[in-house]
Length: 454
Image: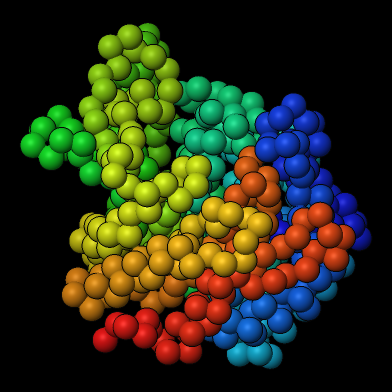
């Protein structure tokens, strides 16, 4: 979240505007994205950073409520169109390919008021928004992401309620939201396929967050099974319907049905797709986009009391290996995890073209521009990525580092700094200054690889 300009030039409120303005320490120090990096007015400065790095691709998200303030095409905000047209045109003029995300957590508040992602009505709203974007920008944008990390978003926003809109629905919200997210993605893919693909010749997918997991005790069958369940609930929950057969993994369906019955529900808390919906969902991605940040160990933890909740359904306990270096907060430095995730995707989903659309580490000392230690984490990660490509023959075509600038990191506010460029959020001018890693990354791009890597 780096645009700022939360109510500038006709932009409508998003759920994150509402959520952050309510206070209550739900976000670090009650910080908001009202100004953030100020990219709405400082795009030219962002472009300088992009050129300084020598990027070949740049991924950014559209704000639904900047383009369609009430979430519908009833009113279209031309100033929003102008802003994104300039970004797209400037990137292309400078030889940078735009990768555009339609939806990155920020539902227009007007649609949340009608039930948000818990309501089936959002599917048609999203499809109309997607069609509007394909029609408006698709003559130049050829790589589209419909929805960013639906697996994380469904859980944090609608089940645990720690992300906007901030209302928990333990044990049901994630599944209901996920069901609608998958159908909305599939509908919009079909819209592109039938109405725009022939002329625009682009590609459409969604991007899935994937942590790697290992059994805490590799010799324990119950831990091995727990690790398989963890991958099924995290990655395959979205990937299997879309890339394989239109339906959830069997272990996910059986596990939730078993727990639901134990809890006295008349049917499973996981909604079912109809046969027609399965046919609509199957095969609705042109590449496999994934985010990798970290790895965890997984241990079987029986849900004896039949407690309600996502992790209780999976019957796992997750934790880091004590020997792993903690970068910050939830991220532990486990470079080999990226190779394992990529190999898993290759083997499970018939060797698809893979885009890594996010991978990164936060800078531990925000006061220092010298992040040599952070660059070492990146270097080790790139070595594992090269092994995946060269040794495992993973078909990885694009890598996008998170992120260009320090920005508003959701409930972490400005406390987690993932940028290659430092942003001073106390300075109204929001100056962008490169960390050491920015200079190293520019070298890597120039050399098309690490200097010490064959």
